[in-house]
Image 1 (cartoon, rainbow, N blue to C red):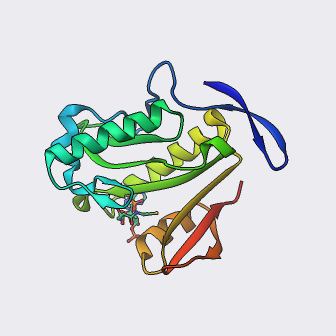
Image 2 (cartoon, rainbow, N blue to C red):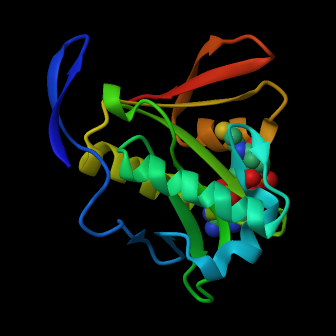
Length: 177
Ligand SMILES: CC(C)(COP(=O)(O)OP(=O)(O)OC[C@H]1O[C@@H](n2cnc3c(N)ncnc32)[C@H](O)[C@@H]1OP(=O)(O)O)[C@@H](O)C(=O)NCCC(=O)NCCS
C-alpha cells in the first residue's frame, strides 16, 4: 500500500504492508517467507506475541492469526526464516512497531538448535535491506535487555549503536542509516 506518511521532518512516501504478494526474499543460505500452517509445529518454542509465549498448537495458531491481522492492517511484517536447503523454519524476524511513523522496530528469534551458525545475521541483513529500500523506513531500531549478550553482539555487528538505556534493564539500539 503506497501512501504518504507524516513524520516530524515533513511527509515521506512509503510502501506499507499488505502487499499484493507476501514478500519472500532470499540470499544463498536462507529465505524470509510467510509462515505456513505446516510450520506451526516447528515454531511452538519461539512464538511470542506481546511478550507472551504460545505453548500449544492452538495458541500458536491464534497468535499467527493476530500476526496476520497486524500485517493486513499495515502495522507489521513477520517472516519465517527458512533454510534454503530444507525449507525448514529456523527462526523468525520482522518489523513489529512504528511503520505508521516511517520507522521499524526489528525483532528476531532463532530456534535454539540453529543459533551460532550465522542464520540471523543473514536474515537481518535481508530484513534491513527490505525495510530501507522497499518499505521506505527512515529509522530502524531494536530493544533488548542489557544481559542479552548474543542479541547485542548480533546487532552491533550489523552497525546498530546504543542510543538509550530504558526502564526494566532494557537498552535501545538504532541502525546508523
Ligand atoms: C539473538 C539471537 C537471534 C542471536 O543468534 P546468533 O546465533 O548469535 O546469531 P547468528 O545466527 O547471526 O549467528 C552468529 C554466530 O554464528 C557464528 N557463525 C557461524 N557461521 C557463520 C556465518 N556463516 N556467518 C555469520 N556468522 C556465523 C558467528 O561467529 C556468531 O557466533 P559468535 O557470536 O559466537 O561469534 C539468538 O540468541 C536468539 O534467538 N535469542 C533469543 C531471542 C532474542 O534474544 N532476540 C533478540 C531480541 S532483540
